[in-house]
Image (cartoon, rainbow, N blue to C red; front, side, top):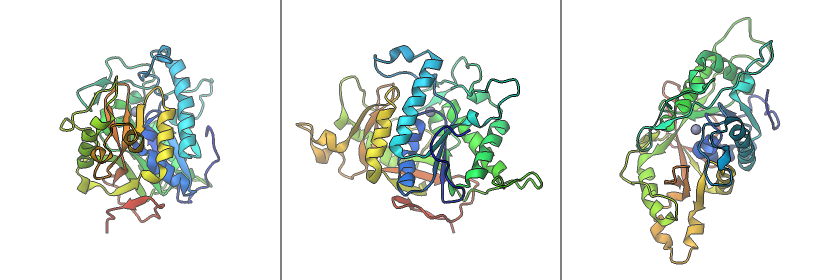
Length: 343
Ligand SMILES: [Zn+2]
């Protein structure tokens, strides 16, 4: 069931992350995962699809684009390298949690693909592939995830807000499956529970967000990272669904102590993430003015996806408590700060 790593002991302050594609764990929760792992606490990452509809950066591996099985296999390798860089001990694909059908053959959840619906907004692709994750029965997938949650008994589960970060249909579906799984995991199904499978109410559920004020500072700073073949974002342009006022951020993670792990994980996803640079590297470039890059210290560096538009890597990751899920106290590892804790 579990693909690699040491199975974390249950109920020891673990973190469980639910992501749509390989690379999302790094892009939206890399510092949280690395910080948790560095503290010696159990970390489990669940990935819903293998990202086989993704575009491929660069000419060397361009032949993988459009070849679903080949790209899926390659991205599994990139994901394994990224998880190693982050120190994550356990990973599974969501469909690997399915009970195998009696007749053999395993259900695979396929990347649903996407189309751009404007800057920072994704929409459904015109044609859905067979087995598209967006069409998967939410209760069935959530039931599988709920069983894993019961066995791991994590302190914290992290995923996307209802908009799926930026609207990708698989991210929205990953949000639905996660929320349903959290509900199912805490249901007391009397008589069916067995050892290690008792109901578990997760104390804290986090949604990954971007504080919009810091995002705009970061977007403006991207001019210092300009390079051939890359485009600059519009600092005043549209922002993704996960952008929220900074005052609504509940939990922050300092990226700097784990920056090398996060940068290493980004570089592991080479078909998906390019132009990974940190402020220090850019500052050493002849002619670069360090103070001008980021006077407030909010920006760690840059990265770009296949669209070639530079995006900031902020010096802090931000999260909010899932709406409708009353958090209960947990012990945060050093580097994670609950800036708001409900009474
Ligand atoms: Zn994704």
